[in-house]
Amino acid sequence: MIPPMDISTPCVVTLTWTLSDAQGKPIDELAEPLEFLVGGQDLLPKVEEALIGQSIGFETQVHLEPEHAFGDYDSQLVCFEARSLFPEDVGPGMQFEGLPPGAATPNMPREAVYTVTEVYPQHVVLDGNHPLAGMALRLALTVRDVRRATEEEIQAGSVGGPVLRVGGTGENLDDQSDRRVLH
Image (tube, rainbow, N blue to C red; front, top):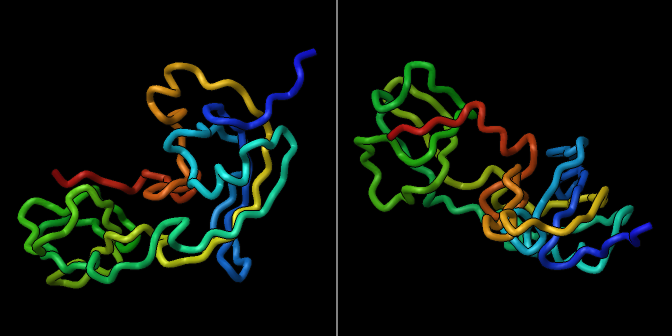
C-alpha cells in the first residue's frame, strides 16, 4: 500500500468547503469534491499556507481578511454607462467581461468583470469589484484527496476548474452562466 501523500508544492488537492462571512452567514458551499493545484493559481495564498504539510482527512477553518481574500472594496470601480450599450434583457446580477464598446467612463480596467447592480431607463450601474471585495471570510475546508500534479497542470498553473483566489471563487460564485462578453 502506498502511504498517503502530504500536501506540498506542486500537488493537486481535492477539497470540499463552506465559505461564510465573518458573522458565519453561509455564502458558498462546495459539497462535491473538486481538485485544485497547490502552488499554482487555483488557491488563495493563505489557504495554501494552511494546507501545506497536511494530508487526506485534514479539516480546518481559515479566517481571511479582505487583503488576503478578494481585496478591499474600491468605489472607483463603480461606473454608470448608457443603457443603450447593453442587451435588452440586462438586469441586476448579470456580469460582463470588460466595459461595452462606446463606454464613456475613463480609466476603468478593461480586464475586469463588471456586475450590473442597478438598471435605470437611461443608464446601467456597473461594479468592477469582486462580489466578495471588502469582506472578511471564514472558510471551513476538508481535504478529500491529494495526488501529484501532472506536468500539464504545473505548466498551466491550474487544474482548469473553479478557483479560490483573488479574482475568482468557488463553484457557485464562479458560475458564468450569466456572464457575457460585450466585445
